[in-house]
Length: 267
Image (cartoon, rainbow, N blue to C red):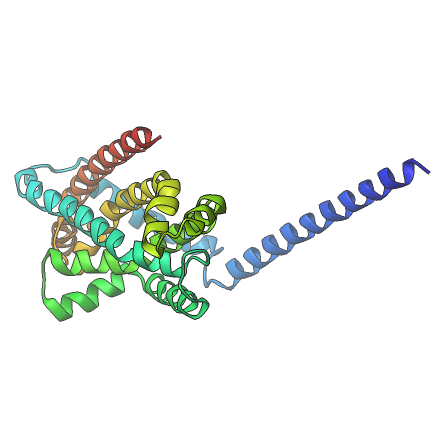
């Protein structure tokens, strides 16, 4: 009799393992079917025919040409400034929306659903599309890049903020409400102190991403080093292209190192 519960638990565990295996196989099957639908994805002949062209392109990119490096310093600084400004504006947009979207801080369930829908709408449009739209609206320069980064990232960062706020310990919130604290006081003294390290981590990760995205946005006229990269591509100066890419790589490594340092400081 005593072995019956053990056998039942083993059977349940075995069934759960089989279900997970079935789910994994289903995902792999869908991935393979999707890959097969991509035209030429497994076309070995196309790869073979394109190999000489790729080799020619690689030979034109080596060695990198750093003759114009002085012209790239300011665009790189603009790209960094764009990433910082975009991150700051992202936080300004994301935090209020996250507080409205989180079930434990929203004033009403309908408002929470509207806030989550707005966040989903923001992150559904890629930065490059927003960059093109804002360049058409406000002209060339860093401003459309900052707006594109902030608007797209507000959807993603706001979602992460809301999830962090949703999982806070409810006891301090209940104690603050029982003491007669206002909604703003509950958020300021019971919610934010619990989630500040997580919000800081999310913000720093997004800043690291923004630097890389800023370089891409320059290609559509949003300023920064991407503008120089696009000019080199149009002039078929592939040796300068490789030099610019190496400069971007060096800056990304520096930004990532600074982000890691800041995250350690927050712990």
